[in-house]
Image (cartoon, protein in one colour):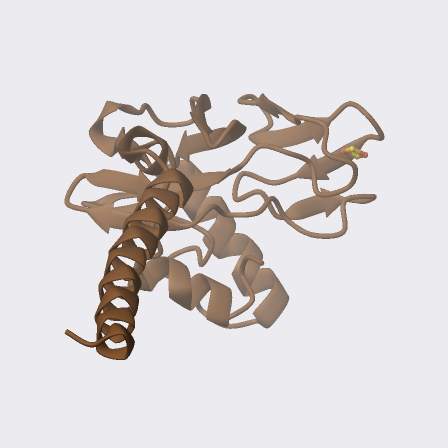
Length: 186
Ligand code: FES
């Protein structure tokens, strides 16, 4: 082998080794950037919706935030229907509340339990079926719509996906996407 062709061969061989090394290094870097499987799984919270009782607030947790779950009683649904009809003047019998999630035959309010004013955690009052935020006196009804300012909007609804009688928080199912599109939640 002539000197020049030997140099060419050595150069190609070195290049090939360097290439393999670079791919290996990239792979190692990608492995470092990818979150661990447990971290990915931690982004989701699955709730068994058959476990809740009517007009009894349960506070769950999702991504470090308090999540309010309030199963509606028939009385609560009827009151809402009556309110809507007073506002629109139309018959709304049987109309589902738009902010509620229907699973099986039941309706649930599922929302992030942080006041949209300055982030305090409102308390639920089962007797009056509303939420009171003690920080500045803001109030929300049993669908977490604002009843009394200063909160600028109702409590936000977390991304959710209905899976039979379960609710997966952190996934965007069609019902959640519709709520976002129609401006029911941010
Ligand atoms: S933080 Fe809730 S009313 Fe101000």
